[in-house]
Image 1 (cartoon, rainbow, N blue to C red):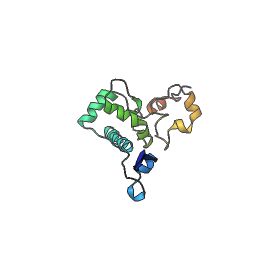
Image 2 (image 1 turned 180 degrees about the vertical axis):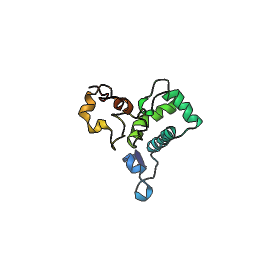
Image 3 (image 1 turned 90 degrees about the vertical axis):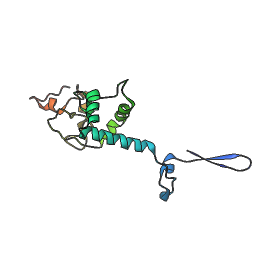
Image 4 (image 1 turned 60 degrees about the vertical axis):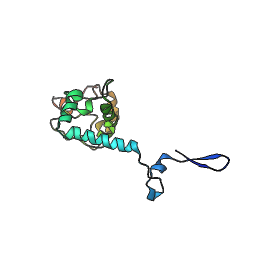
Length: 152
């Protein structure tokens, strides 16, 4: 961010960090809103409503983009709407802030979602995660057979 000051003969530029500009006025900043943070928050709110609501727009997005997959299993594809692209950009950060209710286990990923501990199993057991063949497998798929359905 550049602030300017001039006298009769030449302009002077003053540089400052964006964090300082976005700091509230009562704390010494300029109080400029960080729109990137606000956008992430609003998109996260849409993701929360998509996961927990059952309105017309949720049904539309689920039928168009999710089909028979969970939110954790979908990614942005060329040709998707800009709104969906925005949701996909914040999806991983949004999902890392919460925890899943297991339910029947078909919508929760065994390695990549937080379902048994506050952190995903891939961060607790990185060596195992690196050698597992199916990284996005659901909890139901792993636990539905004996022995467990995990291939290394």
